Image (cartoon, rainbow, N blue to C red; front, top):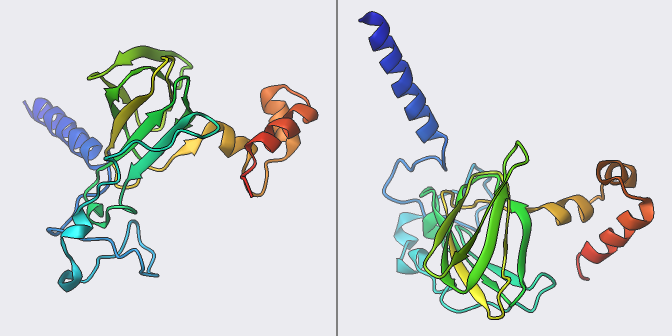
Length: 219
C-alpha cells in the first residue's frame, strides 16, 4: 500500500512538474502589462504602472489583414506577441499570422520556447516536422484544418497551390522565438567559420560563400 501511494505521489509530481515547465511561468497577479520602455532586464518584461494600464495594452488588429508575400521565400510571418501586445506579458500565449504566395515557403525553423498550433484560414499547405530520430512527420492540410509542431523541433510549411494561403499560429509562450535553420547557420554575426560549415554539410568553401551571400541581411 505504501509503495502504491509512493508511486501515485511520484506520478503526480511528474505531472505537476511537466505542467510547470511546459510553457511560460504563470502570473502571480491579475495582470502585468509589459513596460517595453523599461531598461530593467528580467525573464520577461517588468510591469507597467497599474495607473497607466488601458484597453489598448490588450488589443491589436495586426493580424486582421494579409501581409505582403513579396519576400525571398514567398511568405510573411506577422507576430502578435508580447512585443506587439504588451498585455500578453506573463500570460504564456501569443499568436502569429503567416501568409503564403502561391509556391511560398516558410523555411525550416524552430521555436525554442513554444509548441505551435496552426489553423488554416485559406488555401492548402504541405507541412511537417522532423523528430530527433530524424523521422519526418508530414501532411497536407486544408482550410479549417489544424496541425501541431512540437516545441523545439525543426518544421516548415509550403504552399504548393496556385492561390495564396494563410494560417493563424498559436503558441504557449508570450515570445516563442524563431530560429531559421539556414539563416542561423549561414548568416550569423559574427559568421560561423567556413570550415565548420564545409565539414557539417560536406560542401566546398565556394558553395558556403555563395549561400552566405544569398542569405546576408539586406543593407
